[in-house]
Image 1 (cartoon, rainbow, N blue to C red):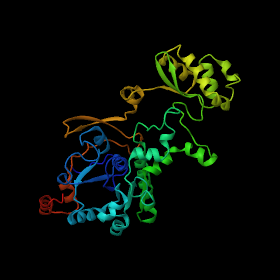
Image 2: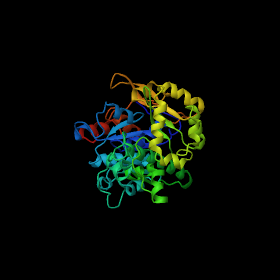
Image 3: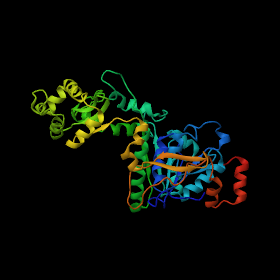
Image 4: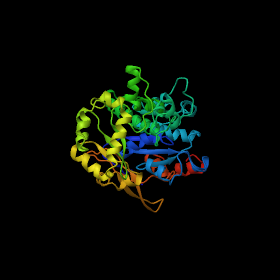
Amino acid sequence: MPFKPASRALSRFTVLDLTRVRSGPTAVRQLADWGANVIKIETPPELEPGEGPGGPRNGPDFQNLHRNKRSLTLNLKSEEGKAILRRLVEKADVIVENYRPDVKHRLGIAYEQLAALNPRLVYASISGFGQDGPYATRPGFDQIAQGLGGLMSITGLPGQGPVRVGIPIADLTAGLYCSLGIMVALLAREETGKGQWVQTSLLQAQIAMLDFQAARWLMDGEVPKQAGNNHPTSIPTGVFQTADGHINIAATGQAIWERFCRSVDRADLITHPDYATAALRSRNRDALGQEINAILTTQNCSYWIARFSEFGVPCGSINSIDEVFADPQVQHLGIAQSIHSPALAREITLVGQPVQLSDTPSSIRVPPPEQGEQSDEILREIGFSPADIAAFHANGTI
């Protein structure tokens, strides 16, 4: 399968993908979906039998992470495998890895070594806790970063104890920040002619995602606590009960609060001595929540969503995952995209990019590759002969 770019946007760039599990593949997926020529470098199956660390290859997680890529198997512990990687590096624009910091030095593929071969190379690294420092050699894992980075202390109901977020948010955001860093480095290269080392970690990404909660501590010395479904600073914003379920309401700011009061025919709440200002609503949040629930349980969710939308009050249903993809607005946006998978012999549906570009849109152009599916093709592209390739197969290099 020759390279088929998913978009024109990044089709001039070649990316070598040495990543595994989730954070690194998330970063590379961004580049692949915008058209980069991504070569996923994997360990030959005989050197790593059984299920890899990314989960079942034909499972939904792996399939969603690795579309729009080609696969080359390479034994990086062999001298011939390293020589092939070096030849690839000489022509590549980007290489992405998420080994523990000591592993790449042991393999001889650290930034300094590869940048010497190609000074224009953008070398991107994702680690658990950073490339150096007291935790550098620790293995990283999403939930560990969620805890160490403070997120679990502010997630969940008050007094519940630490709660993890329902997605691997440290992994995902580290991948997104890494891809952003790569894009910046490629833009900078247009000015300087030089590549550079892009570094991020699960811990850094998790802390960055604390955003205003971190700023509350850094600016004011306030340690945020668990607030459950209530917004920690903007009241009333949270989950409220109706006659047939729950809805989210975000009545943030005085103007929206007043619109909310009118929408539920309770204009008297606007001047109520316990709720007249944001500070009062925050101080009396529990009593206000009970009052709102008493009002909303008189009608069902669909009634209140229509009513609040009419008055310009932000609100929405609380969907299960199947309900998300059945939602008419989600279907209109087209974020679920299908492609035929020869490996699975059926259509598969994956999560597309959440960003739309008018001239160079992204697409899911090719399904995730089988392990080493394009090895011969890629080696031919960089100048190896059929006899060379046959020898690599025979001696276990690929």
